[in-house]
Image (tube, rainbow, N blue to C red; front, top):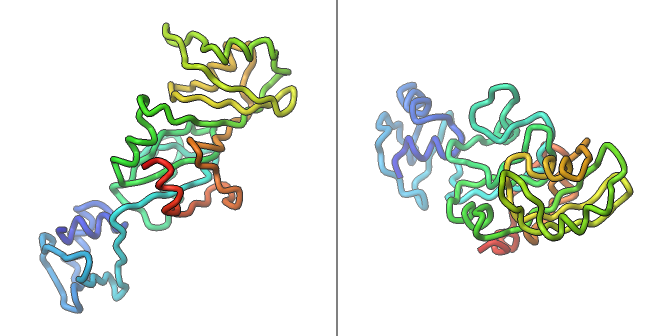
Length: 228
């Protein structure tokens, strides 16, 4: 792997940013100063240091985050800050495995493994997502049967959803699609409005309830294998 790609991957900014680091004589490879951004590394044996600190390399990254409201799933922050700003060691090659709206909390997966992302998020895989939903008014349970059958949205029929009542104004909703504002629009169809929304489960993977809002951890190998 090229040195500039290695440093960009491990959180030192864009390729342009890391080339500046190298020109500033801040990068050493195997204890020797280097000025060559195109230097080819053996990531298994070569030791890279920036400002005297060893840079540790992880080829594949799998993060579970308890996303807080007020952040967007995008690299470029516009109206809201990016979720990636919450990650201490930023990686340019990270992307989101299914997005959550700015005002939605809960389970968010972030990775640099395209195969993993495809297996989790691709529509044909039909991996379910479960949401905890709080509503503005008492939910009319007559709509449960309709949701179980599939309701119309965007001139198509949604796939069947599962509903489990928590209180008369809150429920668990399990769906296998991820259309734009889908949960909110489904509840609007049910003559109600969402006041709070949190994703708590993707497939068999549950949000770690020890993670506070904004906290994250690496997935375990067992959790990764749930989707492989």
